[in-house]
Image 1: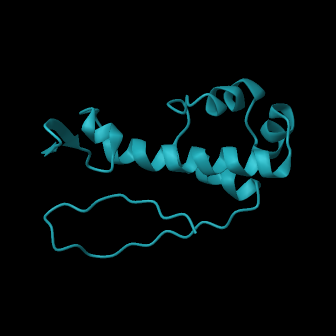
Image 2: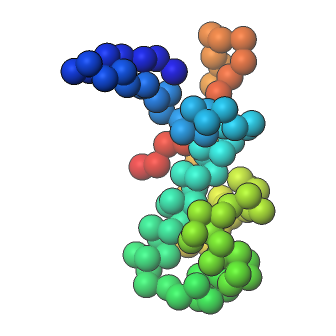
Image 3: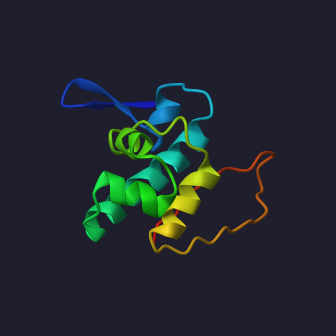
Length: 111
């Protein structure tokens, strides 16, 4: 992370991925999954669903919905999270393009 001095205080500038800033393994994957979970939570609230109703609609048990609503998504794959969004009325488009770097990156764009 880059550092900057602002009014005599040294500030660390984040990378835009808190998981990478914390040096967690699979940081890009965690960022994508967290973005999917945030959108699921928004959809559940927008639709006015209880956790039980959301679980039935998404095809997962209520305790997993509860965990997701509290930020625990480690037990759900990216594919399952995308399926949950589909079941909540979202279209998902996966775009693949070449990169100029030796290794590509995962990104999530919410429209």
